[in-house]
Amino acid sequence: MSALCRRREAGDLAPRDFALIEARVSADRERWDLVEVTAAVLSHGEQVVQHTPLWTLDAIHVASALVVRETAGLRLRFITADVHQRRAAEAAGLEVVWVE
Picture 1 (cartoon, helix red, strand yellow):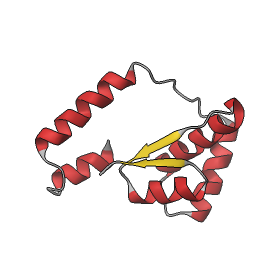
Picture 2: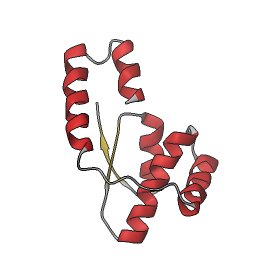
Picture 3: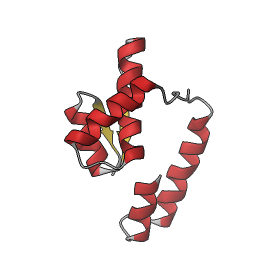
């Protein structure tokens, strides 16, 4: 949401579009499974920040997707509106859905 908030504040995202996205995220949240921040997630996160210019929380999001993919064998789509997070996820081999 922080990337979307920044885009709204910069005028790159209309308030109406932001409201629609926010409503969709809120509705989708009911179907989310939260990933516990384990030693494996932190380890992956450390690797991510060593190779990409990500903030810690962004790296934990990428790392969480990697751990779920590895442990559950699921094919995940990583959704982001942050260019740095997108590049890191792509570099890690995740399928990325870019939100413009």
